[in-house]
Length: 139
Image 1 (cartoon, rainbow, N blue to C red):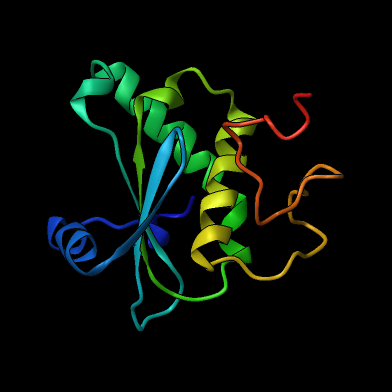
Image 2: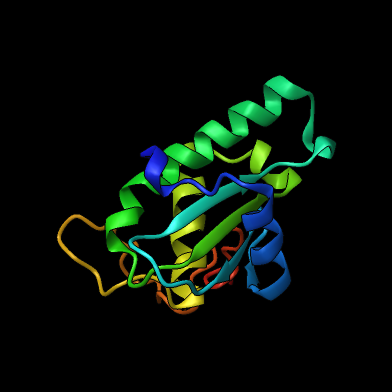
């Protein structure tokens, strides 16, 4: 992810938390707010409950790398904060990326699918797709 897309200042994080809306999944939460500028600003938050500094930094690096191909697909400008939950530690990289894509789509921040967009598996509805549950075909 390029540095120009990152949310850097504490003031920006506080403003986004205060006025933003949130959507959640099992392994992370997305807090977002609209803003008038060029391109999205994205921040990542990993609390101390997840582990020591090595674990937290690895989690942020994985999240940063997972969101990079989704930036061109974003429909509008805004401030976004991805907050990691404990379940992200057990997820593989593809699942982290699909969870981010699911949260962006749920928030209405993702454009219509292009050729370079990662696809949803056949038979899975994009509105009801949750990366954490697979109970649709259990019986």
